Amino acid sequence: MNIDERLEKLTERHQALAESVELLMQSIHEQGANIDKLIANSAQDAENIRALVRIAELHQTRIEKLEERQN
Picture 1: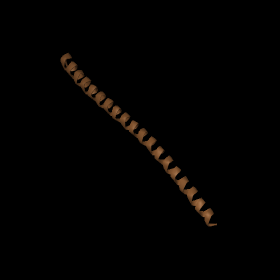
Picture 2: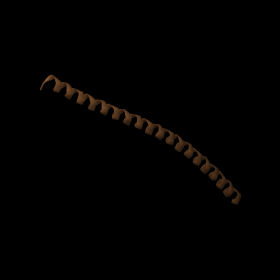
Picture 3: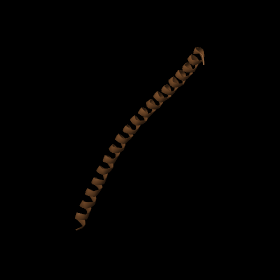
Picture 4: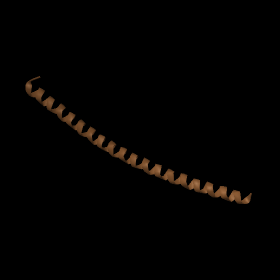
């Protein structure tokens, strides 16, 4: 294998590596965006759960007051 063939092979490998790194960077960026969405969704879920707990507490209080009136 002469020097020109070696240079060509190295150039091909370099190009393939550069493409792999570019795809990896895109994947990392997409994963970061997905993680951000998961965090936002988790925060929204927590807020909704707190609201449901509050509603359940209000209903429980109402039921207890109704039961006290019946006794």
